Length: 218
Image 1 (tube, one colour):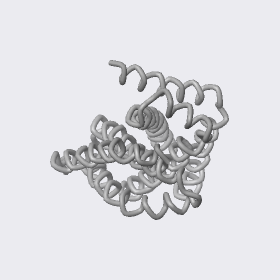
Image 2 (cartoon, rainbow, N blue to C red; image 1 turned 180 degrees about the vertical axis):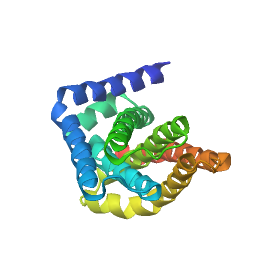
Image 3 (spheres, helix red, strand yellow; image 1 turned 30 degrees about the vertical axis):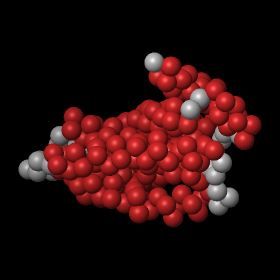
Image 4 (spheres, rainbow, N blue to C red; image 1 turned 90 degrees about the vertical axis):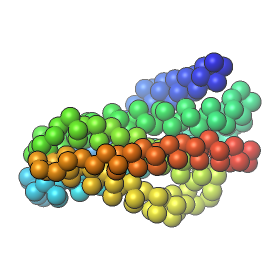
């Protein structure tokens, strides 16, 4: 019970900071809107395969911009304070929860803008929305974990790029395979692929809780 209370308090702290520092949130919104508008000017209404690929590439870059700052914005003094009032597991779980919520909002917003500007090739709308939620959660978990590692290194961007590429590519391939089935009317969404993606997400959460205490002590 105490652990849940600490997680909620840390989550609420990040949420209040995001509300007060609105330039960060609006900056991401501007990035989404400008990117999708440029795509609209370049390709107008692409075919479904191109639409699917562009959507998940945009989700990847949105996640990098939104999640990467989660640990980098914490000063050393603030981290020392958190070290005295919370456990490393509670701290990283609060970060994972907040970034998952942030990516949920950004993913659904980008889906709305995509359908408005680039057409709507989706045949199974409810299934695709579910995949956007699951995909945003998956991407946010991975990059939150990478941001925690990068925050302790001097070459932050380089560390995230090197570590993130082999981890994120399998998830993107799974997401694109699932979303392709949601777009094509004759294909069924493979349940085993969904379970595999969820298993990878659970693995990332477990690794974050197990490994973050070693970074926390640094």
